[in-house]
Length: 336
Image (cartoon, rainbow, N blue to C red):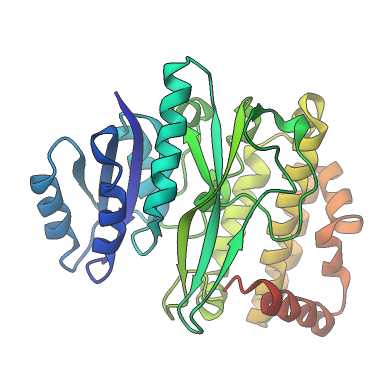
């Protein structure tokens, strides 16, 4: 068994995937790199096959009909032989020095027969437009240099949600969670860092800037104009998250985890609401009402919390005011 599997969903990634793969190859024989070609129409399939030929036993090329980013992640989970599992998007990369420290840590846990469900590291927004970077750290949230559980978490700042970039799961835990990401849907990374959390019992935070998140391409899924066009997919992901986890059951196990997951779902409700506002059409207005109705019917207690007492309660603000709040947050945190 490999120590870790890196799954790299690739769709028409020929122009930039080499940089990503080269950083992962620094992990050596302990790693497995799954290049999941998602029905690409450029030279991506040939590049994936070339890496498999050059690095047998490390790189595997997997070719599938186009199913979207989520199906690439699903395919990786199905095929992974690594004890741990990390997704790396093909236009992103890992810091090689930090990666070595991650591998050393995971190897130590295996040798000492210590159970670890989730490893968390920092990630870095690499903004191509203005050549700046912003590091997202978790020093105020998690203890360092020890295994801990959810009840030992500290205070979460607005910028400190767990993203796909910051997490490394134990592979079997992902399989045990039953999570299957929807096909042909963007923004499924939110499900990936949400649905498995109630199964996580042991966590370790390594204060290393591991993941480098490239941001700024006009066709990128988090670009504002793209998010407006794909707002129905954002809503679909939010509904999946509403259905996928019983928050009241989470509350019975860990109140701190419950508060975090409730806050995360509230954020997703707010994002969907804001981008439906940005859409501006009469149809989008109806979809806003329908999303809140869906939450009310599926989880009345969550609806009351989110509609009136949490982050998404600001959805009751007048549209122009809410959009000004969004623009301010966008300027501060530079998330798209």
